[in-house]
Image 1: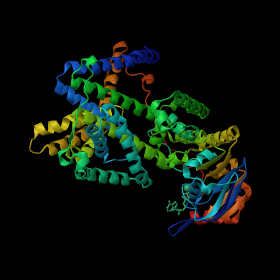
Image 2 (image 1 turned 180 degrees about the vertical axis):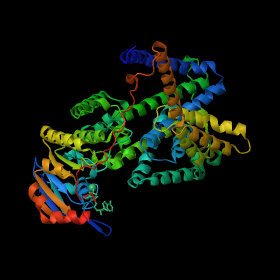
Image 3 (image 1 turned 60 degrees about the horizontal axis):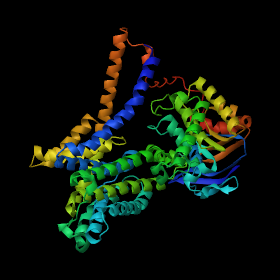
Image 4 (image 1 turned 60 degrees about the vertical axis):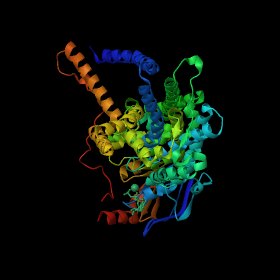
Amino acid sequence: MSTGELTMHASRTARWARPLAALVITAALIATPYYFAPFRVFQLTMVLLYAVVLAGLNLLVGYGGQISLGHGAFFAVGAYTAAVMLDRFTTGHLATLPVAAAGCFLLGLGFGVPALRLRGLYLALVTLAFAVFLPPLLKRFEHVTGGSMGLTVPKPQPPSWTGLAEDQWLYFLTLTVAAVTLLVVRNLLRSRVGRALLAIRENESAAEVMGVRLSFHKALAFAWSAMFAGVAGCLYTWVIGFVSPDSFSLNLSITLLAGLVVGGLASVYGPLLGAAFVMYVPNLAQDISPAAPGVVFGLLIIAVMYLAPTGLAGLAARARQGVRRCVEHLRHTRRRPEPASPAEQTGPPQPEPQPLTAPPTIGKG
Amino acid sequence: MLTVDGITMRFGGITALDGVGFAVEQGTAVGLIGPNGAGKTTLFNCLTRRCTPDEGTVCYEGEDLLSLPPHAVAGHGIARTFQNLGLFQHLTVRENVMVGAHHRGRTGYLTAALRLPRVRREEARLRSLAEELLRRLDLADVADHPASGLPFGTLKRVELARALAVEPRLLLLDEPVNGLSHGEVEVFADLIRAVREDFDLTLVVVEHHMGFVMGLCDRVVCLDFGRTIADGPPEQVQRDPAVIEAYLGAAA
Ligand SMILES: Nc1ncnc2c1ncn2[C@@H]1O[C@H](COP(=O)(O)OP(=O)(O)OP(=O)(O)O)[C@@H](O)[C@H]1O
Ligand SMILES: [Mg+2]
């Protein structure tokens, strides 16, 4: 079998494999809440909700190359925006989502614009300060936020025509928002602005010479990223029906960032895997060592980073590549027992060796 | 087209440029030579607004270049390459070139997020534009390969393609053939001559390779310790005692 045939065969496979996989995954996602117990459905809802924040954080950290230690605070602002609206006004749940999104977008812009004029770790520091200072602030304005006691608000109820239980309805709402989020992030990345962000991450000077406005793109990436955190926070209020300052400590911000890194920076599936990590691993750590869950959590992060420096998504990609290579190898050896043909070696071109004799130059002493 | 006048640039105690002045006529190729540390790259940095000189003016097509913000330089038809390759390592060759065309697109965050039809149209336009440059510079085969890991000679062409995607009228090349083998230099020189013709470019070229400079440039400016020490036709500058002195001094 020639390599040409092989690639043709592979591409033919790929053409129907992709839509089929998408179909299967969609069907599985829709069927999930009918097959699992309400508690499991709740957990999966939380995973989807965390995936929303992490997708936004990935835009900023993974693709934009900046660091935020305060996304838990934007998450909190989104959650409190929804909770206060539901507590004080009779707006209904749907209205809280755009308000939380817009509020966090503007807040992100407000934080981002001054911090981004300075370089490097300033943004990390400013966002860290925000995350530290928000919970006490929430406690302070007791008459609005309910202080340390927090606020208990009603959860969105499924319309009767759906025939769904509350947990199922929440799952579908979150699934919809998560799907839209992932799509939006993907769209951003596949465009001029996404390339500009990547270019900034790779080489600021070169990006600017190519006409990329650094401060504009950094500030907007930050604002969009804060907005997704706010959206996720709003979903949190819907799903949990309760907010309190202690749910949004600095710990949350750090767990989110750790989750993203463990899931895989700048990867499509990173936020989903990271979300599962954020949801399940702290509980797992609690089960393993009730006395010191933090230690177990930390060790697990170290273990993952040691075994998979590019995160779980990187590990998955490597595994897939390995399997594919194995399959191709088997196919080849079965049809033709000779050793690998040169046509098979279609790896990246190797760097040409540099000549030993320097080109004729002057003044290069 | 470009008039540099009395540019002085200090870094702490070092005076990298000291009252440099010269003019570049439309359609010409000007060579910028000088020993290491003479201030050639610093001059390019001033022209692309990477740094702002302490004194002096730069007039480009009748406009004060120094009043532009750094990101607006590309929009005015000025592109450059970098001395040590300023490529986006993890981006593919095609993406690198498409970033070069950044200022030729309009898509903002909201329209990109919604992927409106005009975003798709713009993507297709930028893509075909990049495709054309990649074919022209013989890079079509590596279009989907990340920039990192490609041979040095190829990367030099990628950087040239990215600069051409800016659609420049003035192209600044910082040591374009530095690090290329003897044979590669000839090929690259031919390539630059050809694209200069095709794209109607005005060139300023920093290069230590004298054969390359003499073969390409209509005029040569020599810097030494931030000062212009010679300015004229290539043969004349090459014979200039001050230039020979500067290079011998640097080599000693
Ligand atoms: N950002 C900077 N900060 C401090 N000093 C600088 C900076 N950029 C350049 N210099 C100094 O300015 C002087 C001129 O440097 P420049 O890079 O322009 O030289 P060059 O002519 O390009 O040399 P080469 O042939 O080695 O590339 C050097 O002494 C260098 O150390
Ligand atoms: Mg230099």
